[in-house]
Every structure is written in C-alpha cells, then in structure tokens.
Amino acid sequence: MSEAATQITLIGTKLATIGMEFIFNAPSPECETCKLRNTCTNLESGRRYRILGIRGELVHDCPIHEAGVRAVEVTESPIIAAIDARKAFAGSKTVLEPPRCERYECTMYELCHPVGLKEGDRCTIVDLVGEAPEECEIGNKLKLVELRR
Image (cartoon, rainbow, N blue to C red; front, side, top):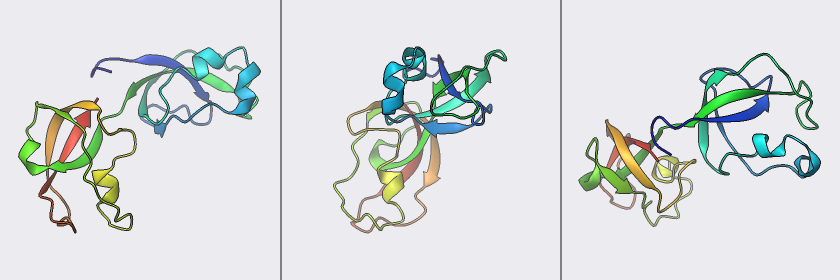
C-alpha cells in the first residue's frame, strides 16, 4: 500500500475517531452472515491502520458493535521499528528482516518485531528516528526508523 493509498471500511461508532490507530484482525463468526461483511472485512489481517476521516453520519446495525458501525477512510499507519543500522537510510527501500531472537522479555523485542508488519514486507524508510533506546542484548547494531509498507 503506498503512502497515499486509502480505503473505506466500517468501524464501531465508539471507535470512529480521526487519528485513532487499530490493528485489523480476522472477522468474527458473527460476520459470516452480515450483509456488510465485505465492507467491514476489506482490510488485511494483522496490519495497523489509522483513521483519516469519517464518511457521513449514517450508522449501520452490527451484531458485534452495540452502537453500530460507520464508514471511515483509513490508511496503513507508518510504524516505528528497530532495524540493522547498516540499512537505515531515509528514503531507501528495505525488506523487513527481524533479527533471529527469542528474548521475548527484551524491552526492544516489539521494536525489532513490530506489530503491523510481517517478515519479508517491502517497506520504505520514511524517516530515520535515531538511535535505539537500548543496546541489543544479542549484539545487533540497531537504529530506529519509521517504516511504511
């Protein structure tokens, strides 16, 4: 999805706030028979999205969201990640290769394995954020970058 790519989807009215970010997960079993399922479930599972705008005032009934759902315009959110310092150049393209690390308790683990991106994703380094907040426990030299798929 490019930087300017947007999609229209439906989200619970209580969640429909411009700037709100969420991770889309697989549809619930209740969605199977809903007439709006194609619009509600049109996002890619496991990706992080940001609401850019709210479309109209119409609220649709929903078996999951008690206050119903409404149409919103979303885009994939840029994601802050720790990557190999040798590959950290603003504007460059990279393939996400999280380090082979099973130190799940490490405070850097989520930066090295960012939610919303998957290993092998082709990304653009939008910005070089700076140094990693801590040294890598297994010796990797890391920089923080802002990535966009």
